[in-house]
Structure formats: structure tokens, C-alpha cells
Image (tube, rainbow, N blue to C red):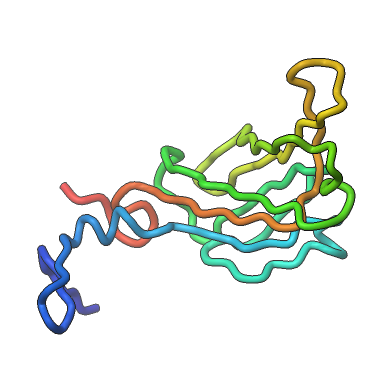
Length: 151
């Protein structure tokens, strides 16, 4: 196996430079672009993904994602965006949406998608829903999957 050891990378002109620590720490360790309507076995479609091997549909708006290559620890960041382009969750009574992340491990993480409706009588009441699109990026510390921890 060959290694390239450098402290700084630059483009061919040399006018854009950055440290290799920024490259390693700034790269997503996993991401997915997923349609979220329906059960995994029939309607969920993975449009594109990196380091996500499978998904389990745990119920309406509740999904568990599994990493292809496990991360070294569970101290990573998950950035989730959801789209509600049409369907039941797109009516005019929806005021806002939120995503909960109830569990994170080195091999998987879970998300729950909720919406707040304008006509709800109980403050803070949420309703789970299957969004039209789910977009997730996972960021981890240096060496999380591809590089060993450095001394």
C-alpha cells in the first residue's frame, strides 16, 4: 500500500490551499438522498448514497440507517433536511417540521420526522409523517472510518 503524506494541498495554480486536517475532518463520512414515502420494501427509493448500506422503516416517519463501514465512535454530527413536496404532509395546515435523532451508534442512527399543524389544540403536539425526501449527511472526527487515529 502506498501513502502520500503532506500537510497542505493546493490546486494546480497554487492559489487555493488548505490543510490536510481540514480535508479529513471536513468530509462527510456518510450521506443519503432518499425518497421517504411508504415502506422500505415498496416505495422508499435511495436516489444516491455513500457509506449507508441499508434502511429499516420503523413506522410512519421513523427510519433507522445502517453504515456500510462503521464509524470509530458515536460522537458524529448528523445534518438532516426533509422535503414535503406533495402528499398528505403538504397541506396548508403544516406550520413547521422537525427531525429527532433518538439513537446514534457506530453502526447506525435513527431519525423521526414530525410536523406541527396550525389547527392543533395542544401546544407542542407533533405528528409523525413520511416526508417526500430525506437528505442526510454525517460528519465525524478525523480518522472516523478511513484513517486510523493518529498518536
